[in-house]
Length: 123
Image 1: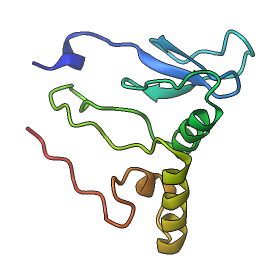
Image 2: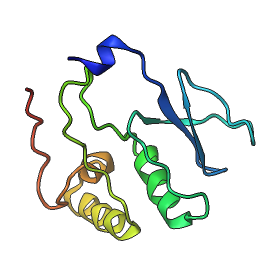
Image 3: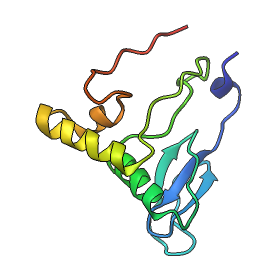
Image 4: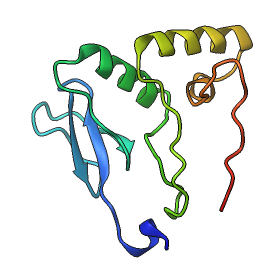
């Protein structure tokens, strides 16, 4: 059964300045600072507010144009997409992107930075 086809689930929106996230149906401004919030996807798990290193990784991922999604567009497949969780993983992927001349978003989505991304299987 298609989860996303049956109901409209809220997306996570993130304010990187305030280090807060909210679930909303549409884009909005941060209630604390008034800046526009970034869409983080359906399956975003926010780090604790004091975790500056965790939020710096989230910022790199979101600024690269990636979102935290674990389900396909219709919600049928539950293969989680890889996203780096530590600054060391981000640092390695930035070096690989610079060396290969590949877009940073593509390299950040790779589970192993030296291997190309395998196409997702549809079920």
